[in-house]
Length: 223
Image (cartoon, rainbow, N blue to C red; front, side, top):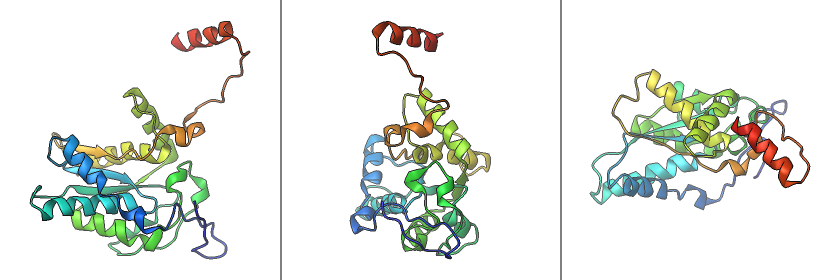
């Protein structure tokens, strides 16, 4: 991860991930979803926004599928950002093509998307959302933790950033953007092993390194 100061000297600033050009070659998001959905596309796809590379790459991938005639339309691409550093959301709400640094990137648990302004001032994700009729959603840390829990109930262990898509989907449904019967893809960007402590509601319990003690702890969890 590369850090740099992009805002005023008094404002905490953080730039997440790498500026390498291959970061924006994420077309496989689109290709894999198309194949996994039996060669059709979802009505909606939701991405966490850090650098904006994922949502921009998906947009490019769907455009390439459309260009060769394999799909007739492109999903509405939506983005999710931590509520404490949501410069892209603010820019989208005001119809701007570029984001302005805002918020405190150190105040969120979502390390993978913790920045107060993405690469290229957010032009790539803003373009992808605007051209597909998508929306940008703020998600709190508490909602991300709830998203981790809900995904866990379905058998997925997600990092906070990936789990932000759960509540983004909920917000979109509440606004009537996502409707009953539509297919929605939540892009869970990484396993919870990337940031395991963030999903813990309590500290690890210390036990004696014995099979009997471990069995007692497991029995407590089961009950």
